[in-house]
Image 1 (tube, rainbow, N blue to C red):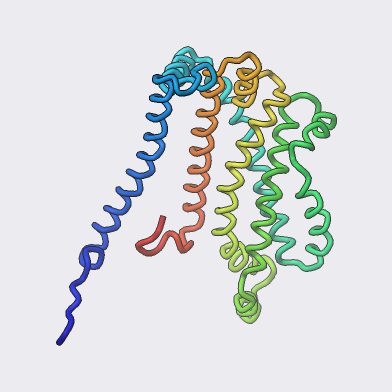
Image 2 (spheres, rainbow, N blue to C red; image 1 turned 135 degrees about the vertical axis):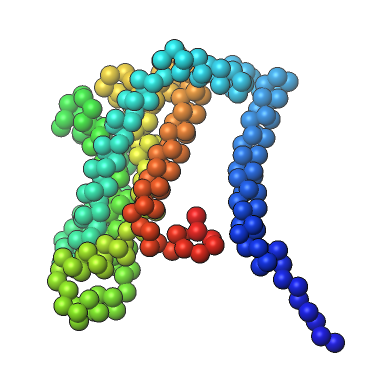
Length: 279
């Protein structure tokens, strides 16, 4: 007896199968949080939970929309962004540069890695009082705090990526007469960028977390989403507190997706850009 295997739908029309899978993934991504929100709304209406502590989602959305219309929310969003973006850029550039050096030069790694490892484990928010003493009460301490936080994440990711470059690539470049700059340009930088982009996405989320915490502790102008959240908690304005938390989540997701988009533009050769499973 001969068994004949009929090709599946994914084999007959892989493009259609991928599109169907993508629709399913998007639907699940929307359905799960929507169900949780509806359950929350129902729990408040049925008085299963205290609405003074957990306001209904409808109430939170109405309050947030009113703050947007009145223009009360935009200054806090802008204040947070003007701290997190410069800090993220400074920390990323510095972390990538130092990561390239420590990953490619054993002597530099031997000189810097022990000290940087020791500083890495220090909670970054614990450094905020030091930065306040060094730079005063303006915007600089918070920008520096974000930069330092991002620096360590990108430094570790970059150094690990450079060390993971196969030795054969370096040897081949040397055989063809590549100098130090050409080694960086054609071998180390292209090979290290894709994993570094992953680190940048992680660092973007951590940067938002740090700036919110820093604003809650010491906002220079009593503004920012962190200040909104912690101040609302102090005066028991739970609606405003939840509005701030939701806006932080939205800002964090958009920032991470922006970093992801830029990373994909910078690394078209990365594996995720090829084949049916590309993101």
